[in-house]
Image (cartoon, rainbow, N blue to C red):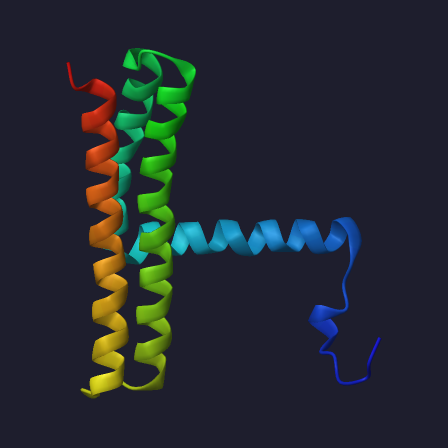
Length: 125
């Protein structure tokens, strides 16, 4: 490996996988701890997942419902990460940071609309 590669990037194999899982778990815990929107989406999404697998007409429909809920969580995590990174740069108003935050928020909104549409299509009589 190159000498310019940081030590934490040199790890390979199962040790790297284990550490990556630890970082992912820490990120989820932090999102639950500090992000109200993520907590709200979990509070709605977890019971929805149970309902999806209990009420969906088939496995593919249940999978689509599950994917739509998971996608909301994923995009919310990315939105929160972008906001945290932007706030680390500056908390002063800046048009490019506002644009980035607004676009990330729009991504969450579009994902919520997609989830609602997915649920409506699966359960529409």
